[in-house]
Image (cartoon, rainbow, N blue to C red; front, side, top):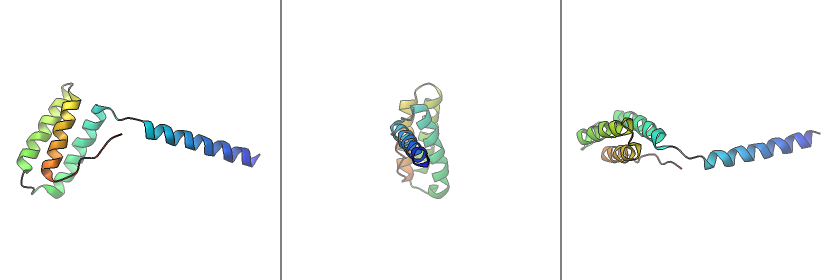
Length: 92
């Protein structure tokens, strides 16, 4: 009886793990994650050579994300992070 329970639990765990790995992140979720990453990285990379340009791109990216153009906003946010010298997080 315990072996069946153990096998059922293992099978359920494997199914959930494969489902989670296959999940995609929407462009709107990517916007939020990249905005947060930028804000966190700005603390340690605030003296980057292109910090003023990076802040402007971050603001543009946020505006695009909020105005229904999240894919374009994600591109801007990625560029903003690049200007800080930080690798943007990747999404599945």
